[in-house]
Amino acid sequence: MSTQALYIRHTAKPGKRDEVRRIWEKYARSYTESTKSQLASFYCYDNNDPDSIVVFGLQDEAHAGDFQKQSWYKDYQAETAALLAGPSELRFATPQFVKGLSD
Image (cartoon, rainbow, N blue to C red; front, side, top):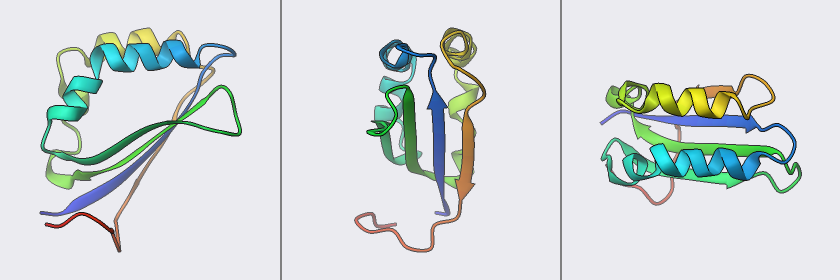
């Protein structure tokens, strides 16, 4: 299995970070917990910015786009877009070392 690391940074409008998280929990949390293509996933609040969210993880590269193919994804995007201050930063990386996960 080939893996891919993912890093996303969202910046919510002032005071809206918890609302963005509630929408993620409504649509994406159960998918993230249950899919086997998400090997590790972290949804985090930035300790230095009260409006920022950092999401990162490790996924099966062959299924990297599956999140966006879910039936609920368009609703998730629409609801979170109204709460974000601007476009999210999205980066993919090829892991060279991973501790704690085995193939």
